[in-house]
Each structure stands twice: as C-alpha cells, then as structure tokens.
Image (cartoon, rainbow, N blue to C red; front, top):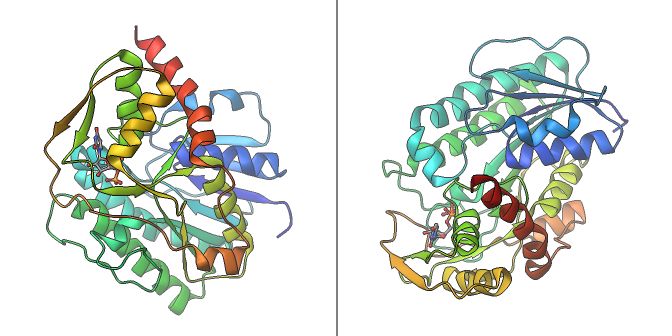
Length: 316
Ligand code: UDP
C-alpha cells in the first residue's frame, strides 16, 4: 500500500492513539475520530501542531461524512475494559453493531480497506487452550460480559457479510490483553489497577485465587501486528497477542517487584464469567504476517510503570 490517508476510529483511546502515531510516522495523513466516551484528548495532545492529523469529535453510531480519499478505515472505537463496558452497556453494544455497520459503509463508499479490532473475548471462557482462530468459543450470551463479547461477535459477523456480499476488503484482529502507556489509570483492568495500587502503597486486589491466566502484549507489538495485518492480503481473523501466559497471582508478584513495594496481596471475589485461561496461538500471525511480539514482559513493564507513576503523581 502506498502512503495515503487513514481514518482511525477510537483515535483518543489507548491503542487507537498509538496507531495514530504509527500511521503518521509512516508518512500517512490521519483523521482521528472519537466521541471521548472512554478515550481522552490528552492521548493526542502531542499532535496539536501536526498538519497531517485532524481530529473529529464524533459518535460513529451517528451519520457523518468524511471528505476526500481514504485508503484505510481502522475501527478501534469501543469501551474495552470490563468496568467500562459494564458501566456503558448500551454504548458498547451500539458501537459494536450500529457503529461498525456505519464504518463498513464508509469503507465501502471510499473503496478503503477496513480493519476490525476484535477481541479474545470472542472465545469467551475458552475450552480450547491455547486459542486458535478456528475455535468458535464458549461465550455466555446473557451474562454481564455479553454486552461486549456479543457486540464483538456481531462486529465480526457483519464484517464478514460486507466482505462476502459487498466485496469490502476487510481485516480482523483478535486482540488479546494489551498494556502500555496511555492506559487509563482507573479503567479497572488488572495492569493499571495493580500498578496504581502498588504506587499508592495500597494492597493489590487479586480476584479469585489468582490462578486464572492471561497473556500480556506490549502495545508497540500490538500496533506492529495491526500495521502488518492492514498491509497483508489476509482476510481471516488473526490473533494478535503475546503467547507468554502467566497467572494473575504471578502478575501481582511481578508488580510488587517492578514497583519496588511491599504491598500485600488481598483476595476479592472473582467476577462472573471471568475466563479461567487465555493465551493466543499466534501461528497464523507468524505465518501470514511474519509477526511475533518483540518486547518481553519485563521490558514492557519497565516501559509502562513510569506512565502510571506520572498519573498517580498528578492525582496527589
Ligand atoms: N483482576 C484482578 N484484580 C483486579 C482487576 C482484574 O485480579 O483488580 C483479574 C480479573 O479477574 C481477570 C484478570 O485480572 O482474571 C484480567 O482482568 P482484566 O480486567 O484486565 O481484563 P480481562 O482479561 O478479564 O478482559
């Protein structure tokens, strides 16, 4: 793909804002769109004087037009942390359905490639481990997480429909747990929550007995995977995550180590339908995109803790 113009939806969010930086760095022009329901203008503040970047405050569930040519539409607009989507169930379901439909129409009108940010949550509480893209998942369609999981599953289905029936060129990334600078300190996810607690000298809240697992991918690796996916010819879903799996209790111990704190670990009830295990099989990404993570967990934490340290200092 030649250097062109991208529309990045959810541009003020954690991953969206890093994607904006990457596309600008590659010489593209970028229109960032966000309604700031969970995103923050501060994630884009460094681009105030960037002539190749425009920002539109806009809910993608409402109609709007984009003037001029567009080569790529990247849809990263959605509440994505459990507390965000539990607080904003309707926004989450609408953006994953109406919003994705509208943005697929935009891609169709512009003849643009469309990238959907899907999620490991489409696998639910998985019975296959690690998770390959061929696995259909084990999702509770009426549980509290269903507002997110089913919105994303619908988003995948409608993306496939636009590809099959309208010939839109689509790409689908199933994104596993991702972390790094620009995560919101209060988004409720385990990385900001525990690092924030350790920095404030508070106990670290481990849900359940901490034996559930996650696999954490540093944000620059995620962005590299998305970049390669857009440029590849590959249209099936691709897992983008780090296959190094750890228990949440081990994660809490790593936080103690990295923040240099003697904060105790306290145990809290496990939320309903919290997946027991999660780890991507990334064979497909390796084969189709030549991609695998380059930043290991220790380095990723060293790059991330200072971000949260500054945010905690601002709150004091
Ligand atoms: N978790 C925890 N303490 C917290 C927040 C989360 O033990 O303060 C656990 C949560 O129960 C889950 C894992 O950490 O098993 C990852 O949770 P997160 O909200 O980051 O995202 P998820 O992977 O569940 O979407």
